[in-house]
Image (cartoon, rainbow, N blue to C red):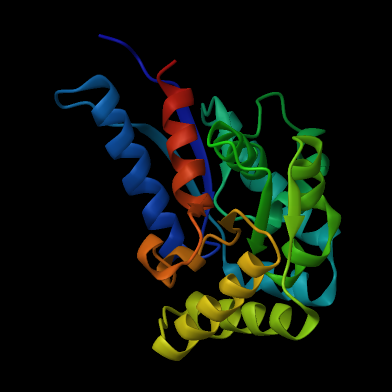
Length: 232
Protein backbone atom coordinates (compact mmCIF):
# COMPACT_ATOMS: atom_id res chain seq x y z
CA UNK A 1 0.00 0.00 0.00
CA UNK A 2 1.32 3.42 -0.94
CA UNK A 3 1.45 5.68 2.09
CA UNK A 4 0.46 9.34 1.77
CA UNK A 5 2.32 12.21 3.35
CA UNK A 6 0.49 14.17 6.05
CA UNK A 7 -1.03 17.50 4.95
CA UNK A 8 -1.24 20.22 7.59
CA UNK A 9 -4.13 22.56 6.80
CA UNK A 10 -4.43 26.00 8.37
CA UNK A 11 -8.12 26.70 7.88
CA UNK A 12 -10.94 28.85 9.17
CA UNK A 13 -10.28 31.73 6.75
CA UNK A 14 -13.15 31.10 6.26
CA UNK A 15 -14.43 27.73 7.39
CA UNK A 16 -16.73 27.53 4.33
CA UNK A 17 -13.78 27.32 1.95
CA UNK A 18 -11.88 25.03 4.34
CA UNK A 19 -14.67 22.49 3.81
CA UNK A 20 -13.90 22.58 0.09
CA UNK A 21 -10.21 21.95 0.77
CA UNK A 22 -10.99 18.92 2.91
CA UNK A 23 -13.41 17.49 0.35
CA UNK A 24 -11.24 18.07 -2.73
CA UNK A 25 -8.07 16.74 -1.10
CA UNK A 26 -9.81 13.53 -0.06
CA UNK A 27 -11.49 13.09 -3.45
CA UNK A 28 -8.18 13.59 -5.26
CA UNK A 29 -6.33 11.11 -3.03
CA UNK A 30 -9.10 8.55 -3.46
CA UNK A 31 -8.94 8.97 -7.23
CA UNK A 32 -5.16 8.56 -7.19
CA UNK A 33 -4.95 5.55 -4.88
CA UNK A 34 -8.35 3.92 -5.32
CA UNK A 35 -10.24 1.67 -2.94
CA UNK A 36 -10.91 3.01 0.52
CA UNK A 37 -7.98 5.42 0.56
CA UNK A 38 -8.37 8.92 1.94
CA UNK A 39 -5.97 11.72 2.78
CA UNK A 40 -3.94 12.05 5.95
CA UNK A 41 -4.84 15.53 7.15
CA UNK A 42 -4.20 17.58 10.25
CA UNK A 43 -6.38 20.71 10.54
CA UNK A 44 -5.71 23.79 12.64
CA UNK A 45 -8.70 26.11 12.26
CA UNK A 46 -8.16 29.70 13.38
CA UNK A 47 -10.74 32.29 14.44
CA UNK A 48 -11.20 34.39 11.31
CA UNK A 49 -12.41 37.40 13.32
CA UNK A 50 -8.93 37.69 14.83
CA UNK A 51 -7.26 37.41 11.44
CA UNK A 52 -9.58 39.94 9.79
CA UNK A 53 -8.96 42.41 12.63
CA UNK A 54 -5.22 42.13 11.92
CA UNK A 55 -5.82 42.64 8.20
CA UNK A 56 -7.99 45.72 8.60
CA UNK A 57 -5.61 47.32 11.10
CA UNK A 58 -2.51 46.44 9.06
CA UNK A 59 -1.06 44.35 11.89
CA UNK A 60 0.51 41.71 9.68
CA UNK A 61 3.10 40.92 12.35
CA UNK A 62 0.39 39.73 14.73
CA UNK A 63 -1.33 37.67 12.06
CA UNK A 64 2.04 36.13 11.17
CA UNK A 65 2.49 35.14 14.80
CA UNK A 66 -0.95 33.51 14.89
CA UNK A 67 -0.43 31.50 11.72
CA UNK A 68 3.16 30.60 12.57
CA UNK A 69 1.98 29.16 15.88
CA UNK A 70 -0.64 27.14 13.99
CA UNK A 71 1.95 25.90 11.50
CA UNK A 72 4.42 24.91 14.20
CA UNK A 73 1.69 22.98 16.01
CA UNK A 74 0.93 21.11 12.80
CA UNK A 75 4.62 20.42 12.19
CA UNK A 76 5.07 19.11 15.73
CA UNK A 77 2.00 16.91 15.26
CA UNK A 78 3.50 15.21 12.21
CA UNK A 79 2.55 17.32 9.17
CA UNK A 80 4.89 16.99 6.20
CA UNK A 81 3.68 20.15 4.44
CA UNK A 82 1.69 23.26 5.37
CA UNK A 83 -1.28 24.38 3.27
CA UNK A 84 -2.72 27.81 4.16
CA UNK A 85 -6.36 27.72 3.09
CA UNK A 86 -6.57 31.32 1.93
CA UNK A 87 -4.89 33.58 -0.63
CA UNK A 88 -4.46 36.80 1.33
CA UNK A 89 -2.51 35.32 4.23
CA UNK A 90 0.21 34.12 1.88
CA UNK A 91 1.48 37.66 2.40
CA UNK A 92 3.19 36.47 5.57
CA UNK A 93 4.63 33.21 4.19
CA UNK A 94 8.23 34.54 4.28
CA UNK A 95 7.95 35.16 8.04
CA UNK A 96 6.41 31.75 8.62
CA UNK A 97 9.04 29.88 6.61
CA UNK A 98 11.78 31.17 8.90
CA UNK A 99 10.20 29.25 11.79
CA UNK A 100 9.48 25.95 10.01
CA UNK A 101 11.50 23.01 8.77
CA UNK A 102 8.72 21.71 6.50
CA UNK A 103 7.60 23.43 3.27
CA UNK A 104 4.61 25.68 2.70
CA UNK A 105 2.75 24.86 -0.52
CA UNK A 106 2.22 28.32 -2.04
CA UNK A 107 -1.21 28.95 -3.56
CA UNK A 108 0.00 31.51 -6.13
CA UNK A 109 2.75 29.21 -7.37
CA UNK A 110 0.30 26.34 -7.80
CA UNK A 111 -2.10 28.64 -9.65
CA UNK A 112 0.62 30.05 -11.91
CA UNK A 113 1.74 26.55 -12.86
CA UNK A 114 -1.83 25.64 -13.75
CA UNK A 115 -2.20 28.75 -15.93
CA UNK A 116 1.08 28.15 -17.73
CA UNK A 117 0.13 24.57 -18.54
CA UNK A 118 -2.86 26.03 -20.39
CA UNK A 119 -0.71 28.51 -22.31
CA UNK A 120 -2.16 31.54 -20.50
CA UNK A 121 0.03 34.65 -20.34
CA UNK A 122 -2.27 37.52 -19.28
CA UNK A 123 -4.67 36.98 -16.38
CA UNK A 124 -7.38 38.84 -14.49
CA UNK A 125 -6.98 38.68 -10.71
CA UNK A 126 -9.94 38.97 -8.36
CA UNK A 127 -9.43 38.74 -4.60
CA UNK A 128 -9.32 40.82 -1.47
CA UNK A 129 -8.07 44.36 -1.86
CA UNK A 130 -4.80 43.23 -0.26
CA UNK A 131 -4.29 40.53 -2.88
CA UNK A 132 -5.24 42.80 -5.77
CA UNK A 133 -3.30 45.92 -4.75
CA UNK A 134 -0.21 44.64 -2.91
CA UNK A 135 2.76 42.92 -4.52
CA UNK A 136 3.12 39.73 -2.44
CA UNK A 137 0.79 37.74 -4.72
CA UNK A 138 1.25 39.45 -8.08
CA UNK A 139 5.04 39.21 -7.76
CA UNK A 140 4.81 35.41 -7.67
CA UNK A 141 2.77 35.47 -10.89
CA UNK A 142 5.21 37.92 -12.50
CA UNK A 143 8.19 35.76 -11.57
CA UNK A 144 6.47 32.89 -13.37
CA UNK A 145 6.13 35.04 -16.49
CA UNK A 146 2.48 36.03 -16.17
CA UNK A 147 1.01 39.52 -16.71
CA UNK A 148 -1.69 40.42 -14.18
CA UNK A 149 -4.67 42.74 -14.61
CA UNK A 150 -6.84 43.97 -11.72
CA UNK A 151 -10.09 45.98 -11.68
CA UNK A 152 -10.24 49.75 -11.32
CA UNK A 153 -10.15 51.30 -7.85
CA UNK A 154 -13.93 51.42 -7.37
CA UNK A 155 -14.37 47.82 -8.46
CA UNK A 156 -11.52 46.68 -6.21
CA UNK A 157 -13.56 48.01 -3.28
CA UNK A 158 -16.71 46.34 -4.61
CA UNK A 159 -15.01 42.96 -5.00
CA UNK A 160 -13.50 43.27 -1.53
CA UNK A 161 -16.81 44.29 0.10
CA UNK A 162 -18.62 41.32 -1.42
CA UNK A 163 -15.95 38.99 -0.03
CA UNK A 164 -15.99 40.29 3.54
CA UNK A 165 -19.59 41.44 3.91
CA UNK A 166 -21.25 38.56 2.04
CA UNK A 167 -19.19 35.52 1.07
CA UNK A 168 -17.31 35.29 4.36
CA UNK A 169 -20.71 35.25 6.06
CA UNK A 170 -22.06 32.55 3.76
CA UNK A 171 -24.19 34.95 1.70
CA UNK A 172 -24.30 34.33 -2.05
CA UNK A 173 -26.30 37.09 -3.75
CA UNK A 174 -27.36 37.20 -7.38
CA UNK A 175 -26.77 40.95 -7.68
CA UNK A 176 -23.16 40.45 -6.55
CA UNK A 177 -22.69 37.70 -9.13
CA UNK A 178 -23.91 40.13 -11.79
CA UNK A 179 -21.40 42.77 -10.67
CA UNK A 180 -18.55 40.25 -10.69
CA UNK A 181 -19.56 39.15 -14.18
CA UNK A 182 -19.41 42.76 -15.35
CA UNK A 183 -15.95 43.20 -13.87
CA UNK A 184 -14.69 39.98 -15.44
CA UNK A 185 -15.99 41.09 -18.84
CA UNK A 186 -14.24 44.46 -18.50
CA UNK A 187 -10.97 42.70 -17.67
CA UNK A 188 -11.49 40.45 -20.67
CA UNK A 189 -11.96 43.56 -22.83
CA UNK A 190 -8.57 44.76 -21.51
CA UNK A 191 -6.91 41.61 -22.77
CA UNK A 192 -7.21 39.06 -19.96
CA UNK A 193 -7.19 35.48 -21.21
CA UNK A 194 -8.34 33.85 -17.96
CA UNK A 195 -9.68 34.77 -14.54
CA UNK A 196 -7.97 33.89 -11.25
CA UNK A 197 -10.45 33.54 -8.41
CA UNK A 198 -7.80 34.78 -6.01
CA UNK A 199 -9.86 34.48 -2.86
CA UNK A 200 -10.92 31.09 -1.57
CA UNK A 201 -14.51 32.33 -1.11
CA UNK A 202 -15.09 33.64 -4.65
CA UNK A 203 -15.69 30.12 -5.93
CA UNK A 204 -18.88 30.13 -3.86
CA UNK A 205 -20.17 32.93 -6.11
CA UNK A 206 -18.53 32.47 -9.51
CA UNK A 207 -18.60 29.09 -11.25
CA UNK A 208 -17.08 28.45 -14.69
CA UNK A 209 -20.47 28.91 -16.33
CA UNK A 210 -20.78 32.37 -14.72
CA UNK A 211 -17.62 33.77 -16.29
CA UNK A 212 -16.87 35.08 -19.78
CA UNK A 213 -13.27 33.97 -19.18
CA UNK A 214 -11.86 30.55 -18.29
CA UNK A 215 -11.91 30.31 -14.49
CA UNK A 216 -8.95 29.24 -12.39
CA UNK A 217 -10.33 28.63 -8.89
CA UNK A 218 -7.39 28.86 -6.51
CA UNK A 219 -9.17 26.80 -3.84
CA UNK A 220 -9.55 23.82 -6.17
CA UNK A 221 -6.07 24.22 -7.68
CA UNK A 222 -4.38 24.48 -4.27
CA UNK A 223 -6.29 21.56 -2.79
CA UNK A 224 -5.59 19.31 -5.77
CA UNK A 225 -1.90 20.26 -5.69
CA UNK A 226 -1.72 19.39 -1.97
CA UNK A 227 -3.32 16.01 -2.61
CA UNK A 228 -1.00 15.25 -5.52
CA UNK A 229 2.00 16.26 -3.40
CA UNK A 230 0.91 13.92 -0.64
CA UNK A 231 0.87 10.80 -2.83
CA UNK A 232 4.13 11.35 -4.72
